[in-house]
Amino acid sequence: MAGYVVAVCALVWVFHGIKIDVLRKDFASINWALAIFGMFVDVGRYASQSVRWKLLLTPVCRIPVFSAFRALYAGVFLNMLFPLRIGEFTRAYIVSHRASVRFSSVVSSLIVEYLFDGIWLALGIGLVAVFTPLPKEILGAARILGLVILLASMGFAVIIFHKERTADAQPAEKKGLLWKTLRQGVSFLLRVRKSLKIISRSRLFFPSFCLSALDTLFHVTAFWIILHAYGLPLSYLVSAAVLLFIFVGVIIPNAPSNVGAFQFLCVLALMGFGVDKTDATGFSILVFVLISIPQLVIGAIAFAFSGETFGTIRNEFRRLRAAP
Picture (cartoon, rainbow, N blue to C red):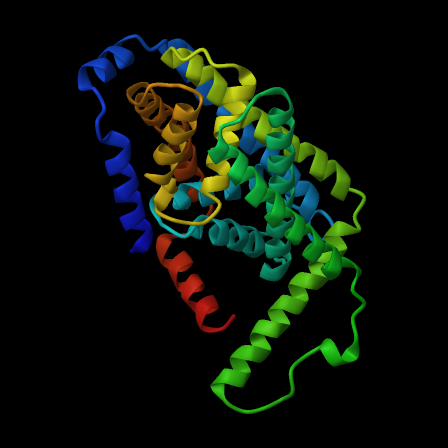
């Protein structure tokens, strides 16, 4: 519920004070051929993510790139419909179910993906800051992100290099629902840690990290193309700064598809670079719709062919919540 409240408040701010006649003229002058081209460029990031996911999963299971792509898009589709990024759980469940591999092993690959994305996000903002003066809002977000990524990397290193001891294996055997849940939770986390070690020691770990840069590159390029299609000829680096700022702001799960938060952050960042609020609002609507269309269409098809249903996903989610 809180996510929906935040989304509504964000949209109220975004649309407050905009000039409808200017917005109408902006949409009438959009270069639709260029905008649609940018929409298809954005799909490339999911192709690169699928290859990366396959490489990360190779040490624990074998999965074709197309299967990874299908599961990834099925998850994206559910993220568009439901809050709290239920789609991340869904794609992990689909792969674990189809490849007959532990759910914890697939979750470990997602953790590594998040770490890779965060590192490239921090590096991207740092690189942009070298060549382009950034507004204080983006600089503040960059500092917060840098601290979070540093702590996350340190935690990952501790998990990878920490030597297991027999005493760490399980909590003491006691009766009761609370202790049973605790044992199940600790057992799950231990399996995740074991899979993290296996993945991090694979020869495909570093290639996967390098491949992660393509995700950001595809997304920034698509964002920049759509900016020009809307009539905002900002530089590539400014486009990267705006998009990376949005990425930082939507790290915390909120409303489905980050609606509200996406528009608010996009408008705020563009205004920081001198763009009029009405122009920034119109662009935030356009880019959100263009990016969402392939996610909904391809995602719906991918979910339909995944062999799962909303009911099975809901029941499995409830089961895991009841017994971690």
